[in-house]
Length: 198
Image (cartoon, rainbow, N blue to C red; front, side, top):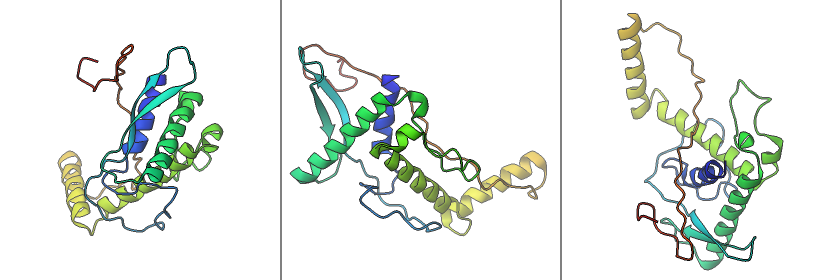
């Protein structure tokens, strides 16, 4: 459970596809229906590890990778604090409650109560909102990517059903699914990089 919760934090902090929004809570969200343009890839700051101090059970040193953000000291401190709060929220909220859902078909199932009281929950909702708008922008039939996408959908529909006159469910779910995380442990040594035998 801890590994999955930790992985969720890493996914949240590195998500946003190529859309470049560092602080969803600090920026206004796009208007509903707004087309989102793609930007170059971006690696946000993210927690990479932590060091537990022997003999001091609740004292941790967190290891932060700044990604390709250029943050001054105060902004880096603020971002570090936000990521640590994500980590602690993910440890204290049951794994079964680490989800958000902006499906138009499940308006009564948006966010679990406990997660809804956290900054992580608020930011996950913002990320899900943006994910939906990115997807809608990419599959918009009059855009380059959308034209190619729908041409392929209709090509496969014709190959499978012999017609392109079929109902297309335009509210397919788009969601983020975590992968397995690897945890490296060293006693008394600095945290090693993944793959370094650490």
